[in-house]
Amino acid sequence: MLSSMIKSADWKAEKHVPVIELPERIEIGKPFSVSVSVGKEIPHPNTVEHHIAWIALYYVAEGGSLPIELGRTDFSAHGVIATAPVANFSVTLDKPGTLHAAAYCNLHGLWESEAAV
View 1 (cartoon, one colour):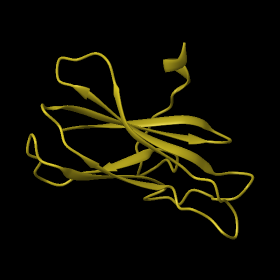
View 2 (cartoon, helix red, strand yellow; view 1 turned 120 degrees about the horizontal axis):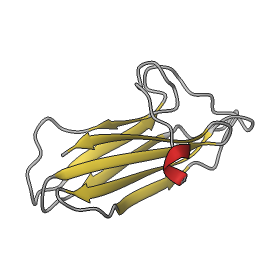
View 3 (cartoon, rainbow, N blue to C red; view 1 turned 90 degrees about the vertical axis):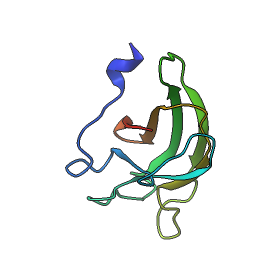
View 4 (tube, rainbow, N blue to C red; view 1 turned 45 degrees about the horizontal axis):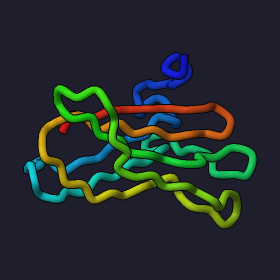
């Protein structure tokens, strides 16, 4: 049931979709930076009434079925003083797989995207 409530779309046309940015080259066993943001192409509001509450990053190993939560960032300040919906992670993987990003908008619910690594 939960999977039917998670939304996804092209981030270039929908401001709620988390955008995963990776280096061009990733090496197994070596750390690399992952940036996840919301509103990259179309800015998302950041007001008390309408904001991104959190971003989380998960990893599913190739051939695996369970996600591993790599990290989560909560955004507490909205309005005149605000935190931008951007989260940066340093990740080291032991095998290829897929990164999944999730972001929660207080008005429009849960959004996701994924990227192969």
